[in-house]
Amino acid sequence: MSETDDKHAVPDMPDTTGTITMEVARFRPDRESEPSWDSYDVPLRKEWAVLDGLNHIKDQLDGTLSYRWSCRMGICGSCGMTVNGEPKLTCSTFLTDYAPGPVRVEPLANFPVIRDLVVDIEDFMAKLPTVKPWLVSGDEEPAEDSEYRQTPAEMDDYRRYSMCINCMLCYSACPVYALDPDFIGPAAIALAQRYNLDSRDEGNEDRRDVLASAEGVWACTFVGECSVACPKDVDPAGAIQRYKLTAATQAVKDLLLPRGAR
Amino acid sequence: MTTADRRYHHPVSFTWWARKPSYLLFVLRELSSVFVAWFVVYLLLLVAAVSSGNESYQGFLEWSSHPLMIALNVIAFAFVLLHAVTWFGLAPKAIVLRLGSWRVPPNLILAAHYGAWLVISVAVAWVILR
Ligand code: SF4
Ligand code: FES
Image 1 (cartoon, rainbow over the protein chains, first blue to last red):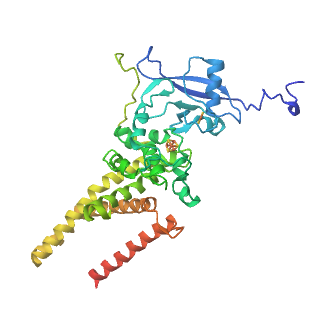
Image 2 (spheres, chains in turn blue, orange):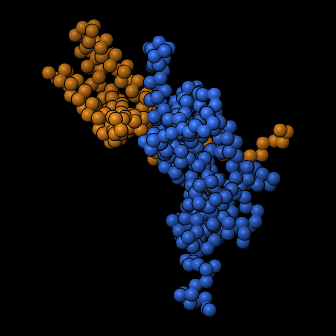
């Protein structure tokens, strides 16, 4: 079978419409004190995501390139990088959308860079548990075979926020987080709301101190870029604004009502 | 840990706010609070002038019609408008209203805000211009 015979194109020789240049930020702490750029020409294939381009570089051109990825299907949240200035999941961002190129790939902004495209996510990992993103139950222990029932309408209250995959694109898009690294951040607040709005949860009070603090929702000035960046349509900006109202209402109630009536 | 921090921290560039329109809008909105404060001061000065007699009120009017004051107030008005419009844009995100099982659509909440603004503005205009 000849290679020019389209009808019988061999699977590992897919449609290639030339090449595209990928400019990749490199940072090798053992060799340099600042990031630099390396350019690679990779095949431009219509089914190739930016991550496929990086994999091609690592497999064929330069095995020293470091980056994170796992699922290749937009669910593990580990492949977030800055593509042409915007935070993106590289497994769901296609090279053809950037043709003729070049495509610039940098690590996620607002996080310290460990190496090449790998960032240190420790800050987010430390903040996340402070909002108790799990079901807090008031009872001691649920009875042996009891179940927590929930209607579809009750589930709709928080479903959107439960879609978060912890990819941190929202942190990368947020100028408030860039300027004030203590800001607890979009995803942590959206995840707190995912549980606050769950009919089975009783943890609202436990989360309040962190959420209603100066480094919580009140640090947010509604830039809205987190919701633009979010690949899962979580709308963290909406979650934050909604909690601002909750926090404000609660504060007024605390002031005006006697304990029992709150 | 004894090893030095070898991570690279990107400095926040001085012009970060110029990178995206939404960042610029955010900075302008932050700035608008200064003008909101100015309008409060201006209103208080007006009230003070009115309450201390016709002469001081005339003085206030004269001061206000100075070109620089007009320019300042036009700019301040633009910023206050920006503040109000972006604030209203945020409202439907913060307010989730349920009537029974019906969730009031965000656009209706937004429209209600503009409606209330219109009604109050007309009422104020009626009181002043009557
Ligand atoms: S809210 Fe969206 S952008 Fe932020 S971590 Fe979750 S999925 Fe990613
Ligand atoms: S590799 Fe898992 S989200 Fe991209």
